[in-house]
Amino acid sequence: MTEQTARIHPATTRLVVVSAGLGVPSSTRLLADRLADAVVRAAAGPLGPVEVEVVELRPLAHALADHLLTGFPSPELAEALATVRRADALVAVTPVFTASYSGLFKTFFDVLDPDSLRGVPVLVGATAGTARHSLVLDHALRPLLGYLRAVVVPTGVFAASEDFGSTGLDERIDRAAGELVLLLGGTARRSAGEPEDPFADPVPFEEMLRRA
Amino acid sequence: MQIGVFTVGDVTQDPTTGRTPSEHERIKATVAIARKAEEVGLDVFATGEHHNPPFIASAPTTTLAYIGAQTERIILSTSTTLITTTDPVLIAENYAKLQHLTDGRVDLMMGRGNTGPVYPWFGKDIREGINLAIENYALLHRLWREDVVSWEGRFRTPLQGFTSTPRPLDGVAPFVWHGSIRSPEIAEQAAYYGDGFFHNHIFWPAGHTQRMVDLYRRRWEHYGHGPADTAIVGLGGQFFMRRNSQDAVDEFRPYFDNAPVYGHGPSLEDFSQATPLTVGSPQQVLERTLSFREYVGDYQRQLFLVDHAGLPLKTVLEQLDLLGEILPDLRKGFAEGRPDHIPDAPTHASLVAAAGGPTDPTVHAVDDVTGVSR
Image (tube, rainbow over all chains, first blue to last red; front, side, top):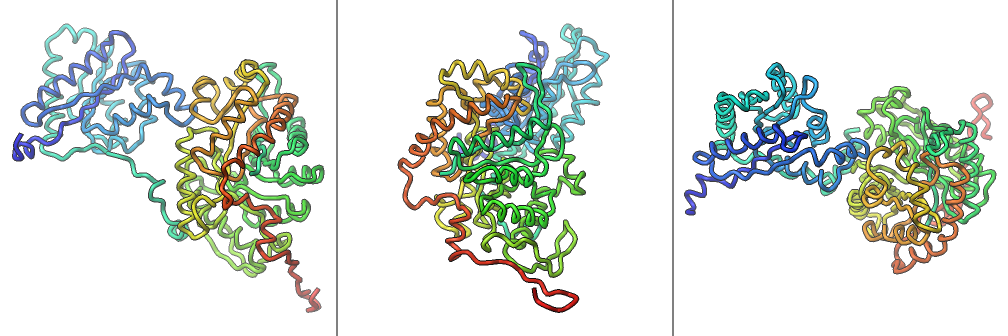
């Protein structure tokens, strides 16, 4: 690769997929994988290579409950949280439980550092047994990610069981993926990077005393 | 090296019997634990401060004075004193009085408290927690060191020409530790004043404790109190011992599984790995405790939590007997390889010596009717 092409195609884009499906196999994970594949395809021309990392929440269910109780993450959960923090873009997919995202999905975002997704483009998806839940993307996932100051692409992908047997789903997946790539295109990497380390560089005491 | 116990005074149901002690029983048990701590040779007994059920830890100086009257040698301390919501003038008075009554067997650990509503109950705002700790301690520090204080701050009514009485025993303020689990500002505060820093240690992984202590040590040196390894560090710890380690695990597990802080969460095994909790034989507790130095350096004070989660008094006293048995080996272990320049934790005697001997700090007032100095 020449220097010039290196500039045109910046470093690999890191796409992180958070999937809160519970079944094995899971329709939520199935949708998540299709969204990720579509992003990789859409990015191939304008953006270059995309590296996909999947964070499955099911194996972290106990660790998430423990974090709520103890206030600190297990090593596996800490690694998952760090993976999201390093993301240039995120695909977040949840099953619909009782008219909203699942508790497992919400708990993961509850323990995520609130700055982790600041300015990060996000594609949201949800699965359910019936299309009557389709607004869950707009009344539940968008406010959650808006609070975290993520940038959610206009098209969300909702898949009821029947959508897996119809033709419109592919089209929505590709449109959403295209929007995510558009948001990523021509911009610098957007990951939040390392958190500020208050232990490395404390506020001097005189300053705290002045502010107090 | 000072070794002791600290309590938060929780009234908790014994999950193995379903019995919850009364407040009266728990208060008396606290005294029995403190007396036992002295009997087995421990150096420090510290009690917390809470102002809500299920705790009996309000009025800490009443408890400590009562214990002080029934003991000879043990240092009476706090874990912690709520510097955020308690008027620093009252802290200055109460603990100076305790110092006189116990002939100097007093120090304190400042903390911010863990119950949100305690702030509004005392007319304060939890969002100002750090600022309250900073301003209130700045005032307390002066009240013990200056006979006449004029002062104005954000959080209490101003003082003009105020003298806190009694003046500290022998003219020397009690030694102060600052405790915090996660706030770098408090480690910074401790370093600034050259006070001690205590890390609770027992609820979070060792790596976190290490970062907090490391910050405190670096800033201690920065503020000119001496090399980083001479900073005054204390740690919490938590164990349950039986002669046979499997017996310890079997007996403690229901208490762990139902404990108010971490119960119904991680397994005893996972939590023991992630935090300093050691459930096993006296030898295992000895070895684990001596390993804390590997990540915080040589330190000055080790306090254990022994009376929580509904453990009955009889069991707690047995734990103290076992701790007494390994105490000589703990002291020997802590002394091993400890460089000569590492200081001990300050005591009243060492602070008096450092001040060049005791002085009578009594402030004699002028009678405002007759004008006669008394």
